[in-house]
Length: 412
Image 1 (cartoon, rainbow, N blue to C red):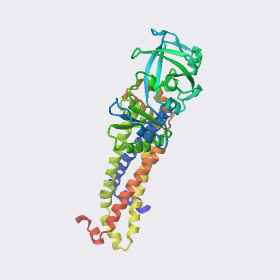
Image 2 (image 1 turned 120 degrees about the vertical axis):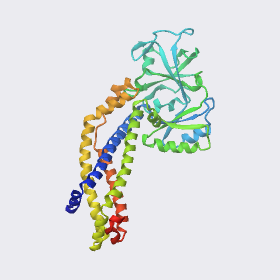
Image 3 (image 1 turned 60 degrees about the vertical axis):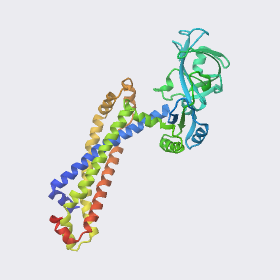
Image 4 (image 1 turned 180 degrees about the horizontal axis):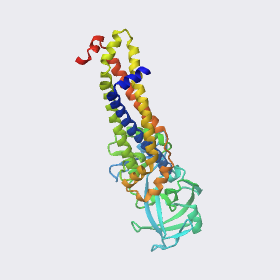
């Protein structure tokens, strides 16, 4: 240890240069890993309320997705169910014109607008599969039937079997459907998200005139961590089906660079990209600049009869001391920076996005995710692995030379 410290002190330029590269590596990787953990936590929370799903869509929206493909994909592990759905808006009507102010939601009179969700399998809709809604009474809709929220039904004194007439605002069609069942919202599920919107009405896909072809299906996954593995299996099923594409909810959110999650994903990928680039520089500095300064020293040690393994151990100990000291100091600095400027960093990302209406929601969610030492541990271990690997490989190569060649390092 003493000899290692003395060698570091005798070569301040070499030691300082490598320490600087390591410090940059630690800083960029720590921030990158921290943002990566924020992004992962944000997307996990997002998935708990909006669901984790993969969708298959035909390039031609007028073409149905084949039934055999749906059956195969539906049997994959972690797939809870799948459905094709469409959405529309409607008003209660007396049979000729839209009524005004006659609809009650959550104890308040509204303009009467209803959100209609038509599914090929309502029970497999994300609202029900993810636990946000559950069937309270009756059955799910099949054919020309409709499922309503029990709070809305109670406020409007509706019962199962009653008929509801609706005026579709997009087409002007009049729908008259019997109530087949009622559902309830799960207590406390996603209070800040879509579960607390006005209760939508659910109906069979075939009962909605706007539904069209069954060209897009959503497959709901029971585990966030299994999403990508299930997607790969689905993509294998699509190898011979060029006209059908596959996507997933998390990747789609990450690509939405105008939103907060997209900006967060772009920034963390950029920082981690810089980290990888810095890692290459550290490898170069370690393998060439650092170990090159030990050619002559290694030749002297070999000439004096010391074993090559002992010499390599000395060199590795030297660079290990430098790395540990630099990582420790850099980690302390970057941890303080993250604590001090975390809120400003998140606020800046929100300002970059188009989600200004969600500032308070996003800030509350991010504030609930603490600054931990995990990013520092990840970055520190990454640095140690990179530096020690480079030093070990280059050290083995150097010590394979003859002692005379190492001693005459000036001519190398």
